[in-house]
Image: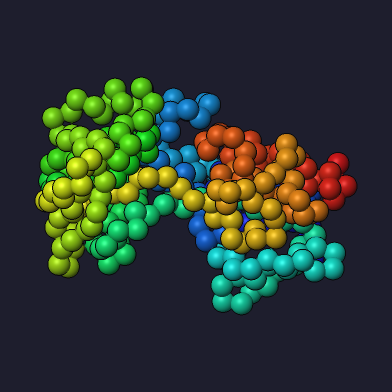
Length: 299
């Protein structure tokens, strides 16, 4: 039986693993990838020590630091976790099982979907949830972005480097931070559709158009070859089903990152901790590891 299993290897999970290793806990990290959502950020300007760094580069530095401690990592999609005598048993896709005295869940969040006709059919064929990842594939063609928050406008900024024009669509209007707005609004490439919503996505083999409607519900066709969905995130809390969650599905934690299940801790975006930021997730991961050390009496 392990002392500690960390589920997830984004900023929270990798930091938790590093701190746990330094306490002698010899943690095992289970995750389907390294870096998580932070890899999708084209520009991180608010992580102390770096004036500007790509999210993928920052996560590579996290990974290098984590691996310098010779931490054990297994690629695994966690399907189930249950209580057993003395701890927990975790089942990965494929059937591998691991047992541990304690667990830190740092499973992050995933993109929300529009749930409109055509979205599933054209996922990966013009419908994307990552402008940083897929923007270069849309060089010289018109695209649209659904979502007027910080993520939506950042996606517009990234896409304007490649696309011929960018249509920004949001039913509630633009609600991004002023600093983000100033970098995007006013560009000749940007076409605003405030108080409009995406109704459907169409095409043949790939996306060729979307239908949008405004306050009068009249539908309009937009000829675009890509749609980037940036309407928020949902917590990946299903693997942490043992713990209590709030109405948004976030795992409820106290200031020590403890859940209501003894031995089960959670950190980062999957939790109720205020502020979904890389620097906050990393700090919460450190807190969780320190709390686990006290729980296991490792000082």
